[in-house]
Image (tube, rainbow, N blue to C red):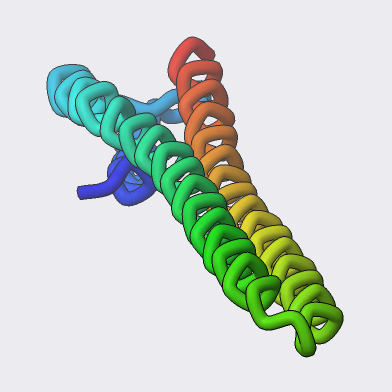
Length: 146
């Protein structure tokens, strides 16, 4: 089970527990709840591993985009050198090379922005889930202490 599923099961157990009349307190199987909390502790590092993977994947995407941009720029520069040798089309070669370089830089920038946005969205989702899990655990602990 995932962490959120475990917390839902934990909440169900608390909701379904027998209550002591006039006290409003519940009777809960302590060992069962402790086992579930231990399972949550075991699963929590997995969520952190996913966040780390997302960060590494973002960095890989950015590195790939930079390599692709460098290759495009190098290709453009090579093309410029070849066109310079042809005297009549030198001006046209400079214009094409500059266009290719601008396009490569624009593509690189767009890829980098997209990769950053994708990674940020995933990290935000993980962060929201972790905050929700922490809030639920905190609330459940408060409830258990009452």
